[in-house]
Image (cartoon, rainbow, N blue to C red; front, side, top):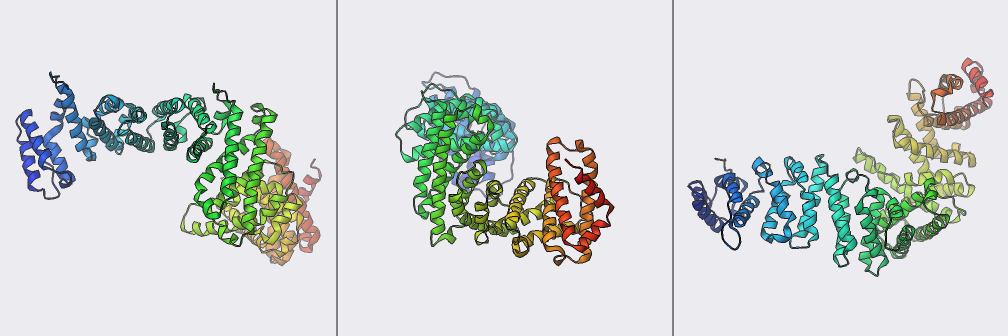
Length: 639
C-alpha cells in the first residue's frame, strides 16, 4: 500500500493516514473517514498525499459499501452506503492511474445508471457520478467502456431533464465524443441515439428550452465527425430537427433566436448537404420547397441588413455573415446539379434563383461601395472581404449571366483583393510548410468561363489586375512540378484557360507584360531542368502550349540559339514519342480523355509550325528532323 510521497504532508494528513491504515473494521473506518472529512481540506492535499489516502481506504472497503444489505431506515442504508462509495470515488478520480484501474472501470455501468436516473437521485450523487465520468473521458483506457456502457446516451438524457447539473452533463458528453473519436472509438450508434432524443424534444418542446436546444444540437453536431453520423439524411433525428427548425423560422422570434436556427441549418448544409430539407416529409403543412424558400429569403434579408452597415458593424457580424454565405453557396451548387430537375419543378427552381440573384446584387453593391471608398486599401485583407469573394466565385462558376456589366465594374477591385491575399499567403507560407487557401482559387472557375467574353477580359486587364492570375499560375507551376498530383492540376488547367483567352485577346502582352514573362521563365526553367520532357497529363501538354506560344512571340530574343534549338528538338521528340504511337492505338487512354488529348496536341503542333514559319533557325531545325516529318503526317491525317 505504500506510495512514495513527493512533498511533506502536514500533521493532520499524517494523523488521518495513521487512523485509516490502523482501522480494524468498517466501524473504525467510518470513524476515520469522519475525522478525515473534518480535518483534511482539499487545498492541503497534493496528488501523492491524495493517492496515499485512497490506498489507506482501498477498493475493498468501497466495494463492500456498494453491496451492503438494506436496513430499515427511511432512506435505505444501501443507498446511503452507495452514495458514500460514489462520493469517495469522485474525491480521488483526479488520479489517472486510479481512474484506469480495473476496479474503477468496472463501475462504469454504475455511473451510467446514476446519470441515466438523474431525476430520481440526489443532486450530490449525480454530480459525483458525473465527476467520475468526466475524469474517465480523459483516459484512453476508459473510452471504449464509457461508450459501450451507454454513457453518451445517459448524459444526453440528463441534459434534457434540465435539472441541476444538466448543462455540465452536456459539456461532458461533448468532451467524451471528442476524445473517443480521437482514439478511434466508434460513436455512431450512441451519437445517433442522443441526437434522436435531442431532436425529438426539439420538435415537441414549445418552451424557451427549444432555443437552447438549437445551440446545443449545433454544438453536439460539431463534436461528431461527419463519418460518425452515417447516412444522416435517413435518420429520424433529421426529420424531427427539420420540424423544429420550421417552427422557429415561421414564428415571430428574436433576432438571436432566428440566427441560431439559421446557423444550425447552415452547419447541416455544410455537413450533409440540403437534400434532407427537400426530401423529408412532414405533417406541419409546410411543403419541402417552401421551407427552403423561407430560409433563403431570411438569409437574403440578413445579408442585405448586414452589408448595408458600416464596415465596423459588418466585421462585428462577420461570423453570422459567413453562416448566410454557406446557405447561399449550398443552394447555388445544388441548383447547378442536373439531378435538381428531378426533385424540383421549374417554378420552384426559378423562385430560388430569383432570391439568389437578389442576394448576389447585394454582394456586388457592397463591393462597389467598398471599391469607391477612400479606405478601400484597408479592406483588402479583411476576412469579410475574402468570404464575400468566395460566395461571388461560387455564383460566377455556376451561372451564365445575361449581363456582365455589374461584375465587370467590381472585377478590378475583386482582383486587387485576390492579389493582396496571394502576396499575404506567400509570406505566411514562408513560415509554415502547409499552404494556405488563396482566395483567387475560388474565382478561377468563374473567370475560366467568363474570360472568353471581351468585356470580362478587358476588366481582367484593367489596371493590370490580370497579374494575380499570372502570379498564381506561376506559383502553381512550381508546386505542380514538385508534385504532379492533387488540386494543383485542376487549378492550373483553369489558369491556363484564362491565360489562353487573354493571349487571344491581347497578344502583345506576351512580349510586353512582366507577369507573362514570369510564367514563361518558370515554364522554360522547368523544361530545361528536366533530362527528358515527358508529359504525364493533359496539363503538361497545356503548359507545353504556353511554352510554345511564348517562344513563338519571343523567338530567339528570350533564348540563346543553342538552348532554343535544344528546346525545339526536345518538344518535337516528346510530341513524337507520345502522339504517334497513341494516335495509332488511342485505346491506351480513357475514351473521354482521347479527344481532349488530341485537341491539345493539335494546338501544340500548330504553334510549333508557326514557330517554324517565323524563325529561320526553327525552320532549319524542323526540316532536319525526321520526327517532325512524321508528326506532320500524323496531324495532316487526323480527323
